[in-house]
Image (cartoon, rainbow, N blue to C red; front, side, top):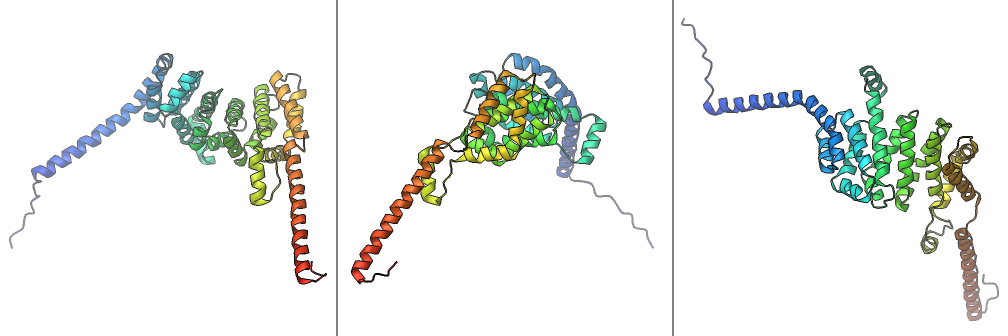
Length: 338
């Protein structure tokens, strides 16, 4: 028998070209991955110059390119927050997509599970993780400071949920709690955003920050400022009267709900401790006393007006019912109807 020799088929030129292209792409990707840490460090080093030159689009683009580098995100959020000290820069950051990138950075570097936290602690990444959350809260607070144009945009991007998640994940990070309370205070200037903050547990989270850091002057001040804004939120009388016609509920609107949640969360006790502290800031005392006054006013003029309207509606309805009864009695001759 003659042994058969198996010959390896020679690849066609087209197939060989495709394999060469695939190998070249893999090599290019590997080289890019190898250069990424160096490029990220270079970008981080240049952030100071970009901030000094107010090059907002370049900073935002760098955040997109190096999203998984915690140090880059921390430094970039700080740069955007520092630049957002005037209306023109705030508008430029929002137009460049900076708000969305800040929230994305918070999502990419949020707290992980216990095992991941332990590994990160061993690797030394926990400070960077906390730093990203803190600087992002700072940037969001600056973007809404004396500017009511960005609260809704931040809420749509998921900023409220991420700020509250950062507060819950890093309860003992005092600077993060301070920046988060301040950001929530500025965000709460918008009525719809304020309602969303309360519904998402923002009141309870702010009170928890006050409990965890009783001696932190800035935390107490920012927390009192946030709570007093929520306690003053009111709806127009016409909107509340419209609700009466639709649902028959007699409520003074979001303010009543916010006041109730502040009391239930223990906000009264925290505010009392904050304003009597020896090192309390003047704003803490002012906002704290104002908040206590709001909490003590159980019946506002809106609720009184709604109560009056309810009684007036009841009287009118009774008169209509009596009129209908008299008409039926006169028509049927029955004295026992109704």
